[in-house]
Image (cartoon, rainbow, N blue to C red):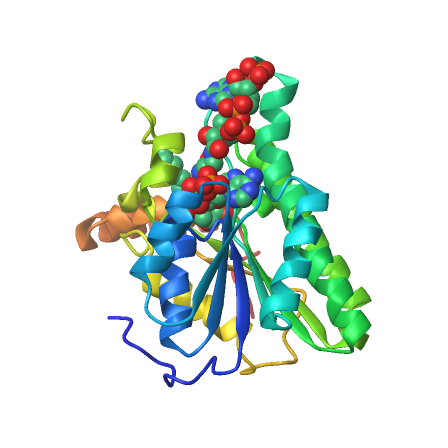
Length: 299
Ligand SMILES: CCCCCCCCCCC/C=C/C(=O)SCCNC(=O)CCNC(=O)[C@H](O)C(C)(C)COP(=O)(O)OP(=O)(O)OC[C@H]1O[C@@H](n2cnc3c(N)ncnc32)[C@H](O)[C@@H]1OP(=O)(O)O
Ligand SMILES: NC(=O)C1=CN([C@@H]2O[C@H](COP(=O)(O)OP(=O)(O)OC[C@H]3O[C@@H](n4cnc5c(N)ncnc54)[C@H](OP(=O)(O)O)[C@@H]3O)[C@@H](O)[C@H]2O)C=CC1
């Protein structure tokens, strides 16, 4: 039970941009931001999707049609937003593209479509907000939605893993460069949280539901929830901990750390299995001791 740990005015006075905010996690997090007092701006490429999302959300929500890969359009839209509404206080780099494919089958355009959306899109948006914050001597908070692939990589989604790793590098780099301007950069790396569009890209046939999506291979035995992601994101976009910067926080129920090179699978062992294992290993130790002569245990 996640509950609502924050006061309803946690984000009062905040103006936050969510790229890719018309669907999935971006749209769901937008609802939480609005419900905690923020004015929210949604970017995406499909006007009807953005309009529908904005209409479904309570409170102050605005939309702009922006392809984040287009640096000039990002800067233009950022200027319009600031002129019409005032300075942003935060940015959520959420827009992404992805699909599973054997890497050797990818065309140059396919690589660019995925890696460019993640890497260039996050840079253009962060740069557009950051340079305005610096010019106006205003603080700001940037949060990017990454994946645990920034630490592990992932087969069959190489352009996405490369793009996310680049944004992880941007987060650490600009946290240092812009700290003196009061601009913080952090990131979240969620485990699987099922959304319609992402699952069409990542598990299109049902035959592709391997480790990444299997709840029983996650130590906590379940997928993540939108509420958990929203709470972590809101914490980072709020003034709760201004000293926190440059961090990418995994939120995956322990999935990344329970890899096949670890003993995570031993969670299946029963008490009897453990008793049998102990008896076997103690017998091996006893046999070893018998061969040591005078060189027994510690004194
Ligand atoms: C099993 C479930 C796994 C769960 C994982 C759990 C762990 C969590 C980790 C999740 C991490 C990250 C997830 C995400 O990022 S999900 C986001 C998914 N959402 C989207 O992708 C939305 C946006 N997508 C799109 O806009 C499109 O789908 C696309 C990515 C294709 C980009 O569209 P665009 O219009 O820009 O590009 P084109 O259609 O012109 O295509 C460009 C080139 O790409 C080639 N292409 C397209 N699809 C494929 C494919 N499936 N396989 C190979 N190549 C593809 C296309 O042919 C173009 O190339 P060419 O012109 O050379 O032919
Ligand atoms: N779902 C999950 O389990 C996980 C998701 N994530 C990350 O969370 C984020 C959201 O994913 P999720 O909600 O599942 O997926 P969605 O596909 O629903 O969201 C992606 C959004 O990005 C937008 N978008 C794509 N390309 C562009 C572009 N060039 N310019 C502007 N907007 C664009 C899409 O809208 P449109 O097509 O209209 O432009 C869409 O709204 C992503 O960064 C993803 O990598 C990370 C870990 C796990």
